[in-house]
Amino acid sequence: MRTTSLTWLLLLACCRQEPTIARAQGSPTAEAADLPAAVTSAARSQRPPSVVRKPNLWSHVHDWPDPVAVVDGTPIARKDLVADLQVAVEGGVLDAEVGEVMGLRAAATALEARIDALIVQQAIGKDAAQAQAGVDTALAREIGQAGSRENWLKILLKRGMTAESHLRTLTTEAQLHVLVERETPFAVTDAELRERYESEEKSLTVPAAVRVLEVAEALPVTPTDAQVAQAQARVAAAVKAGKWSTPERGWQTQRELGKERWAAVQTLQVGGLTPPVRTGFGVHQLKLVAQRTAHKPTFAEAKQQLAAYVQRMKWVRLDAILLAKLRGAAKVQRFSPFDHPPGGLPLAGAVTMAEFEEEDD
Image 1 (cartoon, rainbow, N blue to C red):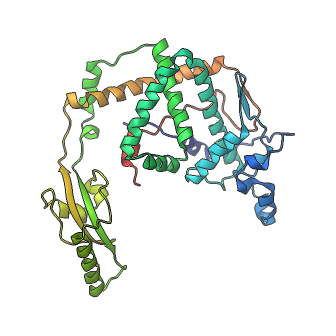
Image 2 (tube, one colour; image 1 turned 30 degrees about the vertical axis):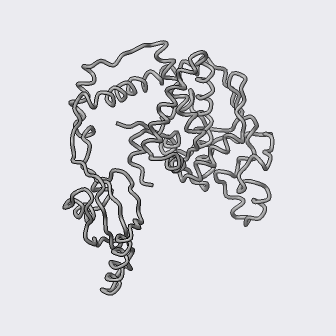
Image 3 (cartoon, rainbow, N blue to C red; image 1 turned 30 degrees about the horizontal axis):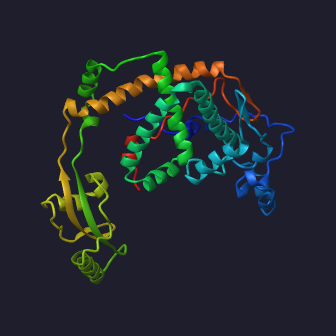
């Protein structure tokens, strides 16, 4: 029960195609302040000639026009597009050394996301406050699921996004939902929810999990008996002093905790301590803070979650239809050499709560 979270994932479907893309002729030269350090003339002049000639993500940025597009009179600046790509590189979603064709497609993807945002923003009008309420709700849930705003920002960076770019996506999505309901009202019925509840037993089941405190000491690959004994002594001393090296991280399943540590805590009552546990990572001792068994929520307990999912699935189709309609009515001028398909690219979905829950920090 999850949706596509990043526009960048669309690039994976394009990476095997290498069509010829015409470069813009006579385009303005970018100012050095607009570009990452790796793109500036000074940086390029210090590279070996073989590197200078090799096209990559940044090798053609200085040829991009500014603005790169205008949507109903509102320009999209080159520097904003470059910033989107730079964040994707820093997050590891996009490789700076991709070829020029792939680089242009990455730029086209980022540009279409910004075009979508402007088109929908101009269409929302007086209902902007209603859409903002949806953004605030989604944002609060995501940060709560991540555990903190700091973790939330880390998760976004791993997906090549900043808080600003993700909020832009959330806002565009929420505004589309409001516009859809304005034009095509729909309701989620109990019969739909009951059908979903009965067909989604596996995904609705809450797995068994524990919350623990832990002290751990690393060991060499092939430790001696003396090294193991020393590690156990240090762990025991830390536990006695209450110096837990790993604070409580919330609920952890068997997959997340590991089979050795999971087996050890299953013999405990809440508040109990495991004996020293040997794993491939070292010596551990854990304190059981809380424990829950696997269970499937009742229909009443799951109803709100199911309603949000069913509603979202309806929105996906209706959002796409409405966005295509809005694109057809908008005046969009592109001045870039990018390869963009007719009608643009689909709107990216937001990072979902499930992805925040499954993210390893």
